Every structure is written in structure tokens, then in C-alpha cells.
Length: 129
Image (cartoon, rainbow, N blue to C red; front, side):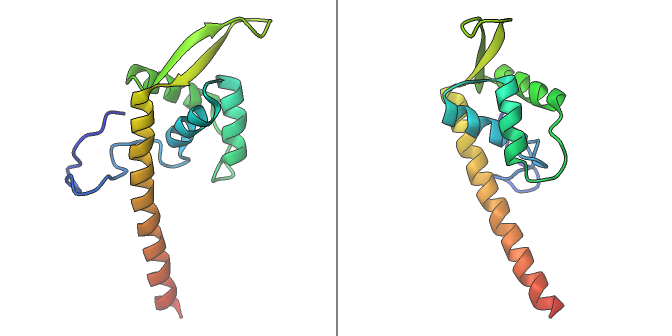
């Protein structure tokens, strides 16, 4: 998704409000996987996402492909049909330079989120003692 100024947080730091798909980090994880693999197919990405999931819920294949289409529409990912592996044609997805920048935005936003969660846990533990 394109980054916008957050009406709740302003422009002082990256926030997760406009980034979407935060619950299971599908978008962020897809960007990272595509960076690590220098391209991959949808089924392979789904398999990797399920191994890395932060929850017990299964990754919905529809959510994966919707996210890939959105990333492609926003210029973060490109795709092309590949027939090199034999069998039916498959779509090969690759990260673009814009996608790398979007991954950097995710890293900043998730670092802020992580710090906020850590602070919450520390304060809550103190109160619960």
C-alpha cells in the first residue's frame, strides 16, 4: 500500500495504520520472502508463510493472492508467467526496488510496534505483581 501521513500519528514515525495485513504480517513477510528468494511462485510462498506464521490460524490462499495482486498494482512486485519448470504455467513473483523500499517501511513500522508491545508487557507485568 502507498504510505500516507497517518491522521492519528502524523509523520513523526512510521505507524502500522496504513500498512494493512498486520494481523499475520502477510504483506511484510511476503516482501521479505521475495527479497530472500529473489522471486518465487505463489504455492511456494504459501508454504513458507505457513511455516513462519505467528498464529495457529492457517494462511488463506485467497488472502495471499489478493495481497500479491495489491503489491503488484502498487508497483512493489512484478509477476510473469513461467513455463520453465514443466507442467502448467505458473506465475513467478519478484520484488521491485519500490518493494524493497516498502519492506524498509515495514521494518520501521514493526520496530515501533515491537517497542510498543515490549513496553506494554513490561508495564503490565509490574502492575500484576
